[in-house]
Image 1 (cartoon, rainbow, N blue to C red):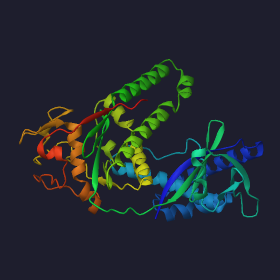
Image 2 (image 1 turned 180 degrees about the horizontal axis):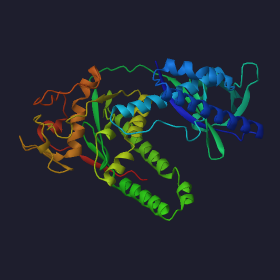
Image 3 (image 1 turned 180 degrees about the vertical axis):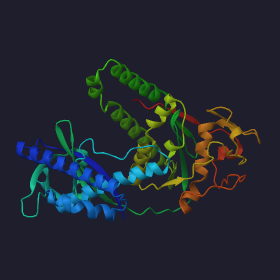
Image 4 (image 1 turned 30 degrees about the vertical axis):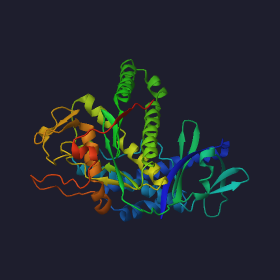
Length: 408
């Protein structure tokens, strides 16, 4: 078995001729993707086979090699499926158009990475009878030992004046051997608190208030610049908020995984939060908070960091985790009098609502490990079955609380 990761590496100052080839090929690639979208819209195409038959030969006529033509078809299919997926959940969206560069898709047979002494060189195939183009790579030290494991479809893209390549890394996975009972660690994700982690002997909170304040600061700056027509200032700050949030998610995920390695046979339990943005609506400010909530990135970071440590990651059904009592199992909306407090109307158990959610996620870890996340709605009136609970939740005793304010 293999785990696939992705690394982004910068091309080392391409020459003028190579830069012209990159720009021309990127424009051709985007043009082919737009042709595929136009064909899908005009002839109501949806399946990959139909879009491939309509676009592939056109891409070959424009000079793309077989692998790049296949990747352009994949890009058109992906955008088409995204459009129909949004329409399926009642989203009012227009058919996608290629408004910016789509980069250059490199199929697995269209490139190779070769090590020459202490340097790594990317060889890209131009056509069947033409020589390969050589692009020296600026590989950081932390990626050098992974470069021999490059395998899969890659992508060339431009950021500003520089060109980068996104390379897939296929890492062999060592089977996890369990010599005892599993230790389930529940992670409850949210906006008020980025994450609440329920360990067997403690609970860890990652406060989200500083991040919300900083996001509001970014939003106010954009609003002020746009009001005064300073779009140059908006473009100047492009990517800063995204980079800052990515760094924060890296720090949070690293701490969660590092603490999980201290327990025997750990299993990290997360919520299956797919489609949450389509079901949660509120004020304009609340919708902006939901739209900027990078929960999927945090989940991906926890997943791949845990996989490196041979820690299984499972996903449970999120329904009812915030309103179910971890002590008696009674589930009702009345158990949440406020956003931050949990008070069971049946047994009187009180605790932090985020802590209760993390406990319930932990309790569903065994079922998720065996059966996977449930996609069936529960019958009305059925209470949550708690098969595994932390000792503190069973007795009503509060576990030690550690509030972790990740520096940004």
